[in-house]
Length: 98
Image (cartoon, rainbow, N blue to C red; front, top):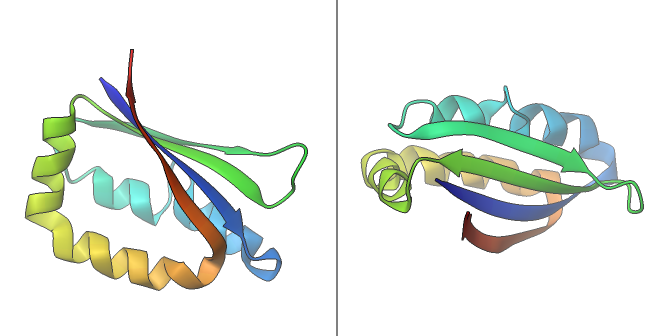
């Protein structure tokens, strides 16, 4: 099992939309559910820095995520473009396993 970890800083005026689209029932999770091996998304908001979020996407394996991106890469890229306006910062922390 892997977790892909991201840190986002949402635009203050777009926080509600960011939370809706990136949360566990949002657009990203809906897209990921179309891929084999996807286990869920979690979003955590910072107590110390409002508007800053830690988002994790859990997959059975890195290979499952790679196959998902091969199959649905165009849709992934389009959603990424749509969501760019919601954030002032986006940083992939890394891919982790236990």
